[in-house]
Image (tube, rainbow, N blue to C red; front, side, top):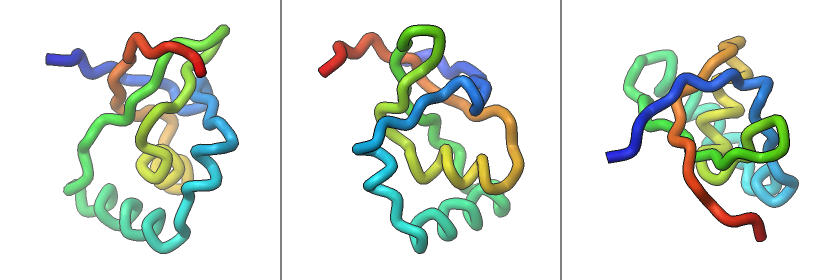
Length: 82
């Protein structure tokens, strides 16, 4: 089982390819779920140079940013760079 960490949102880099996946409607739905406390799935990141790099969970991350949150739950994976 993967350990869940509390990550600082401002330490997470979102690659351009992940930003392109953003769907405004899905972002709103995700934010609504967070506010209702029904969205609790951790995001996935890998360690980068001095920051984390987002692998999965762009809508969850951006929704929490939009809600003014400063931390998010996440899994730190040992992923290879592409």
